[in-house]
Length: 222
Image 1 (cartoon, rainbow, N blue to C red):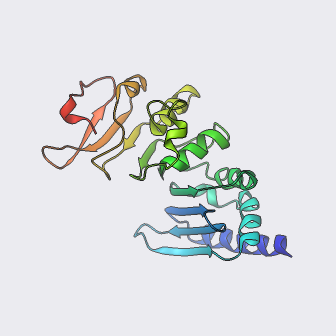
Image 2: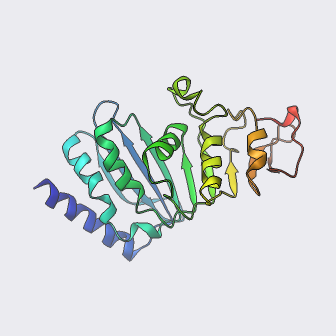
């Protein structure tokens, strides 16, 4: 019965998305207490056109995630916010199904924790058309455990990984949090043609820094 219910929900979602293609999506999965599944499809004005919100239905949430890759109209969404938190091992296969459909995404907003899941648990070539990453200011609470693996931080590791597999990003947008936790941009100098959008501390306006072309002084560091 749960499988049938999931199919019906996702079929309806597909019809809605196909009839009025959304310009962006917000996708949240959290397992702090029980699986939370929250999907919102938005139009160009940022208004939600369709939303699935499940809080107290862990079995249905988990099953719905496992069926998510069957939604054929989802790949047309160009912008997405992904928020994944405290996913236990048994949910990881479903997590992979969540990311697989978003092949047309060009703009991603994600936290450190979400980027860590993308690095460690997903197909290395997921989100093949991604060119812009906007990072949230939230620090990953398990960062100390990953410090040796990612000495320059998860964001830098993600950008270096994308370059290594032949899918480099063009823009890193950290303008949303001027006091960024990217302490050392030296590793990014080798990410060719990467542009960093940041808030200039002197003018308080958004400026850009092209890796490999500019000399970043200490006063400019994020």
